[in-house]
Image (cartoon, rainbow, N blue to C red; front, side, top):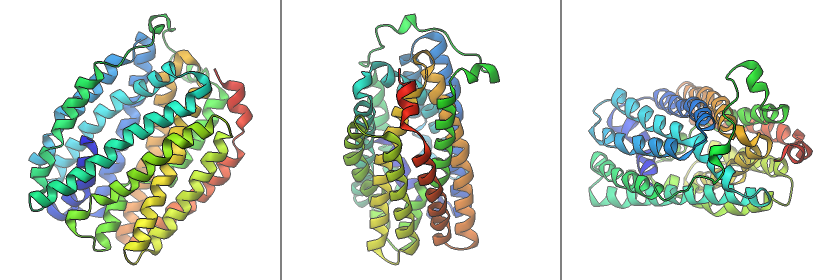
Length: 373
């Protein structure tokens, strides 16, 4: 909730208040998300090594809560970038251990449903946060800095709630780690590396959601209602992630991924052609549907193919590769936006998404079943 309150207003703060270009916003967002995924490698690896997930998850959420006040205090794009990177550093610390913890606690036969539920619950905050931002923007006459102060409160509450989350009972019996070397990482298995390559391609097709906010602003959506962009996306995401996860327990997960990427193609086309609010919000809703059909399922597939003792490392490595791809595509989208047009960025995304559809269809479900632990 707190992070999405910030995320829904950050592009407007950067572009409207601080005068940053679309390229600058794209690079900040891409660098922030890439940092998350780099840090996840080491936090996931460390959670395997010490045999405990929860302390790292708690540290990550605590750091994110601690840096939230930097956003309303920022007076330059550089300060915002620093705050954003620190916030994402906290997310990086908690991300892989949290997902590995879900994988440890989830029964294999309903693993897809468990990850889908986790994804849906996470996205509830992504709905409520921007809605609060809309109400607070109205209440405080579009004073973004004042509204951003309210994002501090959910971060503190999240840390307090986390104290109730258990470690798995067999945590202390987990083997230590794989060496962070070429030979050691090969122990994650060929199926994992094929999945990691597919994940990187999917990330290349999906640049930062900040561009959805910028597209809405470009279409003339009033500043007060800008956070509704992420609300619409997140409502669809929330409503579809759990059903998609449950469905993936009984049918081909790669096939669902392919459907999700086909939906992303449709979303990009709608956003590229948008000349008013109808196509704009159709594209945003389709973007949320594609997230619901892909993100939880990708996490489930990682848990399927990774050795149980090394799930933290596997989630970290997977997200590192995806983060590098996200940095590249967000920067490229910003450059196309500045040099050509907003539509050019979305046409690029649609082209890569088509390739991801084909790659998903070629990823064998039998690979997952053979590797499932």
